[in-house]
Amino acid sequence: MEGNSRNGSKRKLLLIASATVAAGIAVAGDAKAPAAGSAQWGMYNKSYDGQRYSTLTQINTKNVAKLKPVCVAELGDAGAFQPGPLVIGDTIYLTTATSTVALDATSCDIQWQNIYNRDQMAARVARDIPEGAYVNLGIGLPTLVANHLPKDRKIFLHSENGMLAMGPAPALGEEDWDVINAGKHPSPCLPAVPIFTTPILSP
Image (cartoon, rainbow, N blue to C red; front, side, top):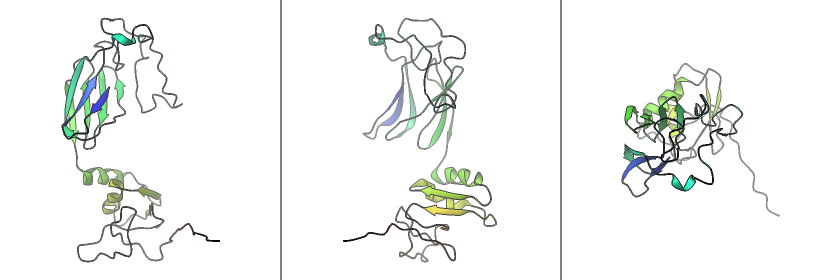
C-alpha cells in the first residue's frame, strides 16, 4: 500500500490486496489464503523482535509482475503520506496526520475514522506522562504537550535545544524571545532550569 500525493490533492490509499488474506498484498487471481495468523500485523514491527518478517509465500519472483491494485481509499486530507498500517483480521488500521482510520481489507471501505487536531493529540499524550518523568519533547507538534500538563503534576520537559524544565507557551504579550524552544517559539522555563550546551572549541 502507498499514499499520495505531494501535490495538494486529497490523500489516497492505494491498496494492493486480496479480499481473503488480509495481508495487504496478493497476486491477482490467487484466492489461496495463508495459514491462520500468519497474515496478522498487529504492531509497527509486526512482533516484539522487530524483524518485520512475513511468512506469506503468495508473492515470489515468478508472479510479482501480476500484482495489481484492488481498491483505493480516499482519506480526505492532503500532503505526504507514509503510514505504518496494522492488519488485524480483515481490518487495516492506519493513521494520517490528523486521523486514525479503520479500513475493510477487502473493499477499502472506511469502517470508522477518528479525526483530531494538533491540540487534541498533544492533550492525549500529556495524559499519559507519569508523575516525576523527564521527557524530551522533540520539535514541532510535541512542543504543544507542555500546554496540556496538569499544573499539579511534577514533570520535567526537555527541549531539543538543551533546556530542561521548560514550561507552557506564554500568554500573548508576555513572550521572552531570549528564551525559545527548538522550534524557535518562546518557551518560559521553570526556576533554576538547567541549560545544556556543546562548547565550540577553537584552536
